[in-house]
Length: 633
Image (cartoon, rainbow, N blue to C red):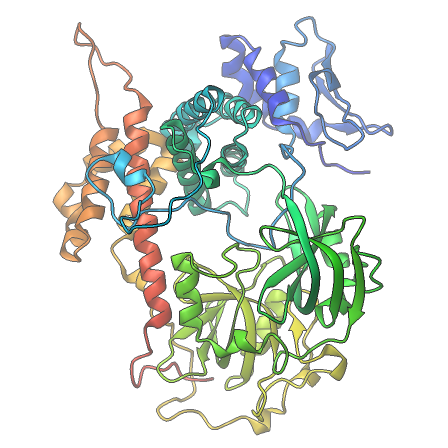
């Protein structure tokens, strides 16, 4: 019998907390902690929680397995439904997605707001999107935000600012409920992107407070930046459709298409969804995808790789489609290139095409640095993270720490780091990269997703042999020259004999592989990052205390000496705002509004994101110094 609690709709939890008295709200965090351990799952799908002798809370999820209405959570105590027991049981359950989710491939980056390349002295200006001064054709007018949308964005901004000022240490159930209430209001007002950003922050706060192993403070920091940026710009009246977002993908008629499989990769969502996405390519270079994602988590992600393709009566499974193709009549396509399965869609299987001589060949002809530069500039043909795959030919150097070092097979190319597309031990990504690392000098064709938050890092989803090279992969003929790292497991027979390995490069010898240069790690920007993460973890007070401990010259002098004066100014402004202690007319300390602190934090975070992206772009173009090539083992 399942021990997992049914997901709870955010608005149901927010209403339960809102109905508590101030005295009961102070006890909510203690009541929620550990109550899931005593949950009892009944045969009818309901879950019960025992609180003492007179209080029994029952959660009765609907047909979809989610508690979506207040009446599905009941308590037998006299204070119900405005009781502590009911709110605690709802708070112990995971948050449900506000809308039917369509998760991205494993570890794909969350969509982030556009960040300016410069940060001014004013926090609001630093957080606003950059506007081009170049003349352009007049665009169609975008409808102005409604009064409801402006009010919802302002309420969400205020809730996010309060949560940021509280930090993880004080961001308990009450703070989270305020965010959930504001997120629900944003959903009703038609602001799905703002709602999704708020839910990510709440889930991050929960993970941090529960000390889950998968929690990363940097991810929560990025979620706060996204939420504050989206809510703040919308509250100012900006009418950017990208900030408003869309709740569902809109599919339009795509006519007749011919597509060939690139690869498939597992999808594993943090909210319990699993499945597969198969990437496709048209002869003209247009990218498409077909996904099959449903509740089921890891088990479904592993099994969906051979699930049938539900598109126009096609008789292929995803494994066959990844190495085959389709001729589609009456296709429906979303803006991101996802193919829909409408009633009028008809699909006929086509023979597969190898990477070397099929439509995928141009992907590997372009230097990786150019492809990444296009992604960072937002000028790629498929900027969506789901289809942002690049290809390159590399030579394996060896393992270094938790990643695999490779050298792009081009003159003056930089060292690249290969990290698993998903580190889950039940998925074969990590095992396959570890086996590849044991063959230094191996020539490899890699198709992967660049990690734009790390220096020169690629997360491969598929690999193949390099034509014309002797020391390369030897895959089975039915694999059609590529291996999907999330499903296929590389064996010893897929590699060339070790005695055919090329001689090490001049100057290389036995020993550990040296680390590749990392401009992000070597930059003093880590001081700003630590200050921002300190604020997320400990709240406004932690930032103020950190600023009092060291003089500004000591803390931000390295930033100024490195020419990062804007970062130093914004960090100093954040520290000063965090330590601002206003007094009332009688000289008593008063709690300052969180708005000024939130704008100062957002300005520093926005500038840091832009600066780090610049360093990431430079890392893809920086050639390895002569004589500094790491030694092959």
